[in-house]
Amino acid sequence: MEATTRRNPLAQRVQRVKPSGIRRFFDIAATMENVISLGVGEPDFVTPQHICAAAIASIEAGETHYTSNYGTLALREAIAVELQRRVGVTYDPAGEIMVTVGVSEALDCALRAVVDVGDEVLCADPGYVAYEAGIIFAGGVPVPIPTRPEDDFAPRAAAYAAAVTPRTKAILIGSPNNPTGSVISREDLEGIARLAQEHDLVVISDEIYSRLIYGAEHVSIASLPGMRERTLMLNGFSKAYAMTGWRVGYAAAPRLFLEAMLKIHQYSIMSAPTNAQAAALAALQHGEPDVQTMHAEYERRRDLIVRGMNQIGLSCCAPKGAFYVFPSIAATGMDADTFVEKLIAEELVAVVPGDSFGAQGAGRIRCTYCTAYEKIEEALERIGRFVARHHV
Ligand code: PLP
Image 1 (cartoon, rainbow, N blue to C red):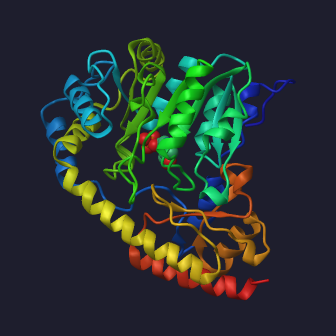
Image 2 (image 1 turned 180 degrees about the vertical axis):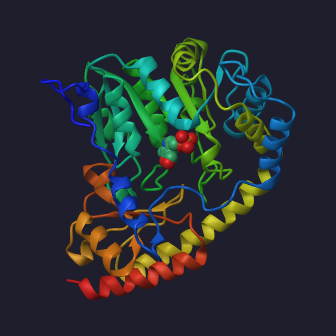
Image 3 (image 1 turned 90 degrees about the vertical axis):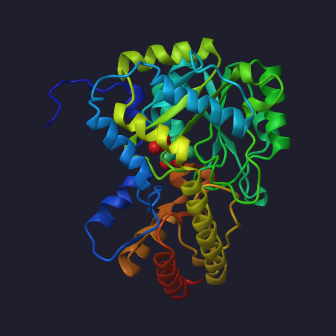
């Protein structure tokens, strides 16, 4: 329907946000047959059966009502145990943990809880597409922190330090990172922590890929001295347990922050889906072998795709985490949009232009390896043919 008002009826902060660069290519891919998608960042595994069974049991037990705004106490208790065990930080399930509709909602609540109009928020470039959008929706100003191929795109503390101004309110980190798979080193996290304390900044830490790390350790910035009190830690079930469709995540933070986030959550969402919370509880209680199995398979696929991209001539580092590679397409002389459009038209492989994730992603593409090993092999063959044809 055409708008009938004379002035633009849409809020400026919404107009300022571009639609996600990822979606455009999926829409094209959806109209074609025999496309191999290395586009979507979502596990190809079906949620483990015992986790599904817990949700079915919850429905059959008549659990069809809202839960507490915080989420079920049983799930919050299990999350507290998990965080104590895996990141070494203690949170009180009564008041310091809130169950959300994925990390997506936790991120939105975190940003809206701390960002005032005009506040600057530092976040790595390239970075997850929702970061910049979320900051703008909250009224803030995203400040991209460049990362470099020489560092395998791992954000460096010095780059954050160079960007701090009197308007800086928060640092938003995602480690492991989407789209590069980079992991921030302990040393750089310590540098970021010092910076946050010196300038009295809040840190929002998206740790959704914390269980998908290869040969490196996951360090939560909240576990560093003096940081628990100024960190909003976000995590969820989508990636590690192959539960994207269930929409469950959580935030853990000191009461001051958690209560502010809860206010937003309770007025906009009420509570995360009840049966999905039962599933998430089963995931924490019995899902560890599934996480290990899927992790081993992702690692095998990562080695395949990194080796394959480099053999093809698309130079690519071995990411330390998540399930993405971020190769350079310089060998083809094309910009990323042209590469992606031609690749899907000529060889039926869907990938995402690197600059959808920020200016530093120019000349690169993001490919996921959360698709079957054999499909990745076939995709590499197709990409190999394509690059050989277009090599400059
Ligand atoms: N954070 C990052 C870095 C992601 O890559 C994603 C999903 O791709 C999300 C958050 C959103 O996850 P959820 O399904 O928990 O909302």
